[in-house]
Image (cartoon, rainbow, N blue to C red):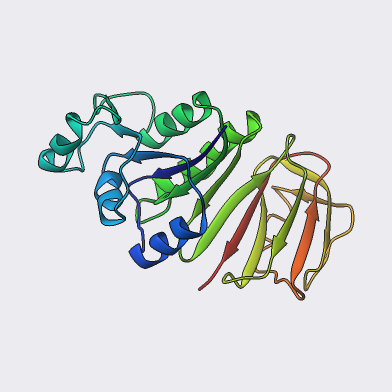
Length: 219
């Protein structure tokens, strides 16, 4: 079982990324297209490089083409999946128990929203997946993960946003505004869970059913 890091092509703060990698013992690394340049800046040699390579210099890619321990999968730009989805599929096939995605957010809102949706692929396969940046930590609760404990750290705010039409039975403890057996409905109270805070050292969140987006964030 692998603890996988995916480095993709969104906005990445290098100082944060270095600290995050030092704090986590990743055993498998996938660089996605332009994320290969970030991997170089982090002194990381990836196990896999994937993408259509429209955002990476051929000179950088050439260096890895003769490395026996690095697998490269090249795709045409006109394809049915984003490069990040391809990377998540590989991570699942490689029996990852955890996936961290650096660069999953950025100026392309369409890619950011798609990447949040892609977390469902991992969740459906029983794999913990998270999108991380200096300003956001994003994950999902759903059928295969109904409970989570989160700890007070560098992120100030905690937001809960329904992804499914209804997220039922939400109960929280340790938050500034707690919920008890509450139902989020996407057409009624979708913004009720935005900008909560942990009041002690940790908080617990439980859901009965549905899919919930959990975002810890800073301004």
